Length: 120
Image 1: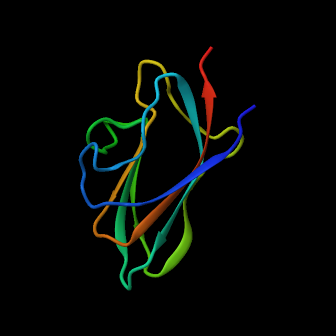
Image 2: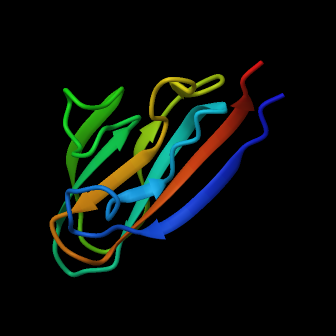
Image 3: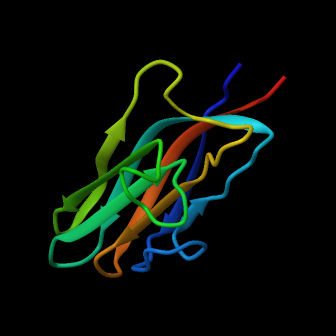
């Protein structure tokens, strides 16, 4: 059974590993991402980039899932991504199932709802 977990961390402004790792890779499990929410505490909109299963730099070519969007000013729990059922699978063994993010400035906090399933 996949039990939901969550992690909330501040998002940095650096597009490199390990500075932008929110949830580290673990080759012993499959990770299922159910939702990603962000809070922007600043008075202006900030750009956010997120990668799931990404390599050293977040981009569409380096990750299982990679996307960017603008987060409005002064919002709490802004839904960035929501996945039904088990969630969006980030591959385990032989790949990176980490979650990485960076913003155009400081003031963003990212919350990831996920479940980990140990590989057989």
